[in-house]
Every structure is written in C-alpha cells, then in structure tokens.
Length: 451
Ligand SMILES: *Cc1c(COP(=O)(O)O)cnc(C)c1O
Figure 1 (tube, protein in one colour):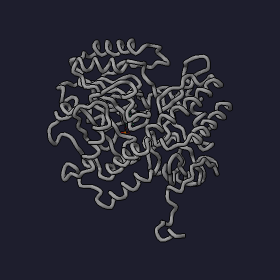
Figure 2 (spheres, helix red, strand yellow; figure 1 turned 30 degrees about the vertical axis):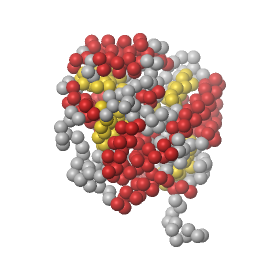
Figure 3 (spheres, rainbow, N blue to C red; figure 1 turned 135 degrees about the vertical axis):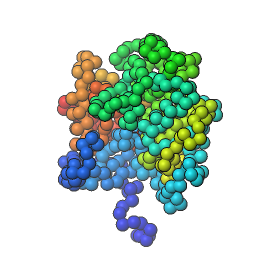
Figure 4 (cartoon, helix red, strand yellow; figure 1 turned 30 degrees about the horizontal axis):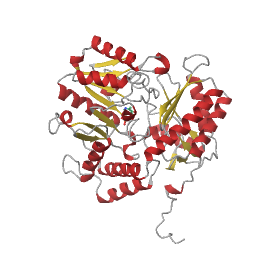
C-alpha cells in the first residue's frame, strides 16, 4: 500500500502477467459489441485480422476488453519489436509529452530528431557519410526515397520485385506486386514502375546468381539501366511471405545498380530495427544499401519512419523539398531514442537470434509431422511457414486460415502473409520468452493435428 498515492486507479500496463488466458469465446461479448459500433462508423475497407478489441498490452501479451490474454506473435505487424509498453519507451515518450508535443522540425527544430538521425547513421551498414529524413509512415518513407533517388539521378524509372509490398499511397500501390486487396479499383496508378522477377528459392530453385541474371536481364530489356533511378528491394520480403533470397542474389543486384548509377534502396520497414537479430536484414545478406528505409519497429509503436542514405544522394533534394507537418514528431523521436538504447543496453539483438533458433527448431519439428508445412524460413524473429497441398508446392490458403483461427480461439495471435495467402508469419517481440514461444507452437501443433 506504500505506493497508493502514486499509483493510478487503473492497473499499469506492466502488471500484465506474461501468460495466455482465454476466458470467453473469441471474440468475446464486449469485443462483439464494440465491433457493432465500429461497423456503423468505420468503412469495411479498414478490416481487422482478429476483431478482438484491445485494452492493454505489455511485453509479449495483449489483453482484450473481455479479459482474454493473447500471446502476441505479430507485434502489430512487427512494430512493438522490443515489446509492448516497454517501460523505458513509455517513460521517454511521457517525458517528451510534458515538455512539448510539436513545433515542426522545418519551423523550429529540436535535438531528438538530430539524435535519431545520428543513431540511424551509426547503426546502418557502411561507414560513409549519411543523412536521414524523418517522416510518419513506411509508405511515406518509400515515397521520399524514390523522390530523392529521382532528383539525384535525373531519371524516372523505379524498379521493384515480384511479391513486393511497399504501402498504400498512390505511388506505393503501383510498386506492390499484389493487386487484391491493396490496389483493386484504386487507379489510375503512378507510371514508370517496372516489376522484375525475384528470388523465391522454395519455388524457383534458382541459385542467387541465376535469379539475379533473370532480374537484371528483365530490367535491361524492359526499361534499360540508363532510365532507372532506383531499385527498391525488401531484403526479406514481408507481406509477400518472408522470402529469404538465394545467396548472392541481392549483392549481385546491388553490384549491377552501382555499376549503372542506379540507387539501391533497401526497404527494411518490416525486416529492420533488430527484428532479425541484427539491426538490418541487409547485414545478414552482405549488403551496404545506398538508402535504407525504416519505420514499423523504430519507435516502439509510435508513428515514425526514416529515409537514411548516402550524403551525396540525400543532399540532392532542394531545401524545402522534403518534410511534412508531423515528420519526426518529438514524442515519436524520443521513443525511438529509447528503442535504440534498449536494444543496446539489453543486448536485444541476441534475443532475436534466440527467438529465431527456438522458433525454427520447433517449426522444423512440426514440419516432420505435418506435410502441409512446405517450407520453414526466415531469420531471427522474422520466421514464416508456407503451407502447401501435401506432396506439392501448391498453395494451401485454407489451411492457413484454419490455423490462424484455431490459434486465436486458443489465445495465440498469428499473422498471415503470402502472395497466395498461404503463409503464417511470426513476428514476436524480442521480449517474448522461449516458454511462451513454445506454448504458442504447441497451440499450432494441436491446430495442425486437427486440420
Ligand atoms: C508495412 C510496410 C510498408 C508500409 O508501411 P506503412 O507504415 O504501413 O505505410 C512498406 N514496406 C514494407 C516492407 C512494409 O512491411
């Protein structure tokens, strides 16, 4: 009772026990009631994978309004990478909220924006001079990356890869591989986007070198290197299904880009910020991108995104050409600084490696038992399984839907992915324990047994 005076009337998020607990049907009655209210005022274009309404969250557990506790293997699509309501992030953001919430960096600047840019320069591959622009969302980072690459090169063409996902704005819709649901009916789309074949080892069986020849010769034939401003790649594709490209594939593409004056942009919005056990998936693949795009995991859940690139490229945009009202918001920037500090002081990159080992081992064991699991892939805390019609490589989206539903009913939140909707992806926070991970895989095991 000693802290009675300082404690608030509602339990603090950090009191959330790190355990799974299902006390109602999922979604429960309160969630269902909220869902009815939502349907009256929110359009169906904004859909929810699991319409349980969340009351609070901490670490690797989210709690819904009915009191159900879910093991969160999605982390808001790889956003709360260092755990929900990380105490240091909450503290830093709260402090900043009290100091000031906004001035607009392009009107009167503040230190935290500069500090985030320093941290990104320090922790991205390559020791060349770098600059960072902060914006609000992943799609906005992609838009700005392309803008700057065009200004720098004086060229228009944008090359992207099959199975890519880059966002929901007009330009990024044109850069996505999958039309439904992201762009169906939303045209006309931006032009000068060229989509090349990628490396998808489970399906194409190609070496990195051979896949790179396909990509490069496609781009040389359909647009020509001299007209390309940039090539935008996800080092590990996110929405596409966590494809880790064959060895040497992306380095070969980068080499070709460099030889031809094409800006090589790594969209690390999903794969970055410690997710894979290194700050950037590029580091696993031997890449030193000209530009790295970050967002999702960078600010512990607060909206922030960055474009970090070679100084000589970034400096080509004219004063006033970059920015935006909320870009680099001071509360988000304070949270991002705390995220970097937490990663460093708690060696969270090692947690990514641990999670990758635990999850991969457990999922490979499941694959031995269930031939519906065609492939287990990914790096660190970015792992997926691709479900197939047993004995083939044909997609099995029905099994993915059944598994995701079984998991939800049993207090485990998993996300789906894949161009063919046949991938279950795991993006747990780096705060999750092996016990919770294995408990969640146990729930999946029951789900596979019941297919
Ligand atoms: C989520 C995502 C984006 C878009 O980010 P938003 O913040 O949703 O605009 C772009 N690229 C990749 C790889 C992503 O995962």
